[in-house]
Length: 384
Image (cartoon, rainbow, N blue to C red; front, side):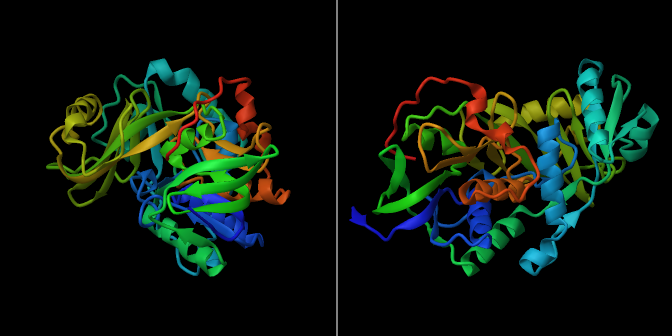
């Protein structure tokens, strides 16, 4: 294994958060940034298997603050990337049953307090937005008109392109296999082809983040769950409405795409991997969910799809920032399937930690690994 030139920062993973971290570091003036990625191009993990929503309506104050920062920055996409953001403002409706009413009422109030245009809807108002929706067993609906659909591929390409223009280097088809520590600080990253001396390493490895953290004996309390997405055709598209709708109890959702086309998503399957193509084995569960909420979607015919991994933490907040145990090591993981919509905030937080700045007005201490207290050391692994 050959010794290569030294870098200031090595980012492990070229998913959306890794690309954003590298881009934001370079934008802030950090030189000698390199991204190491196992696959042969960026975004081939879960970032490329996203439902691709941009949302203000999140579950708690820290996530809403991440969303508001990211949303506002996306609205200035053309100023950063010299192209218009592909964004279709659909609105997002949560269909809330009695068992979830208290939680969603509290979230609704938090959103209002933070300036999110959240609306509490009656049965009739929900039917106005989505006539095909069954509402008799629901308590109410929570609706945000500002939420909408974005293009994950466009955002991935923009970060990659602008990062390259700013001097970021990318090592594709090269797997990171270890992190070397000297004197309590990151010294280098080993890959399948070389050893890369560096001052900082960013763990943006997505579903593989826990394995990367184990190289420095750090436990990460993340639970990888698979969500399946299906693109398909529906016989009766009338009544679906243009709004994106979720069943708040079972995390099933749909979005009408025009004409007879629809996107349906569902799932928290454990101990599984990403998939190309629709997950037909899980389709019966999806159809059962449709039967209880939108019967006209029961017989939709899948024409494509994919399944990505959501890395979930116990408090549903991401893990971002340094750790006490190893100087020079930065986490950016546990994004819970929201890496695309929160990519501006995630990249900015990483850049701020490394540069000792604060350009994002969010309490970044909330996202540190240390919030979980003492965890058992992770078993060291040799490969990502």
